[in-house]
Image (cartoon, rainbow, N blue to C red; front, side):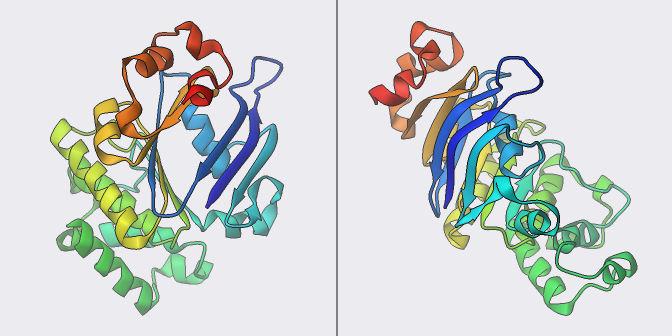
Length: 258
């Protein structure tokens, strides 16, 4: 379970990017975050995995307070937070297997990583996951020889190789065509069920959010103003999230009303 309490992120002396956010993500659920560019969606995800340092507040993952961690404790905690990126973040000259095994770098020795002498159990697990997402046949192919959808599947498997306690996805379908986008969203939903893994997705495509996620969180100007089931995302909520109606400017306006 991920519990975020009173989270604030400010850059310099300007207006906070995140404003006193409270959010609870429970096990085996797929939650999407929607909102206009600049709403704070990506910053929220980057605070969770400590790619950026929160200004204040707490982020608790299954009893571990992430905001207080430093050094080796932080590196160990990051093993439990899988991340799927919009731009895939693969090493093009490496094979699919080598890219997938980079998800185990926090678990194996530097020597094993440099010489690519991966543990047999890690290779077995990699093949199982690659078979599950439909890319096992590309294990020895270079990453730059794959299509966008295939590359994103590599990114998903790499994240799952960490054996994460939560999976974060930052615009995972933004670089993909509509059909492939739906396939990736369906894959994330199904993997969440199969692995009993909470998934938090930052996404622009509202239709995909409504179809493939269990819950939608709407953000505007650094605040959560909607947090409910997809069926409750009506025109009033959409207007508040995207059009800047007065409801959107009240702290938690729609959220408190729902």
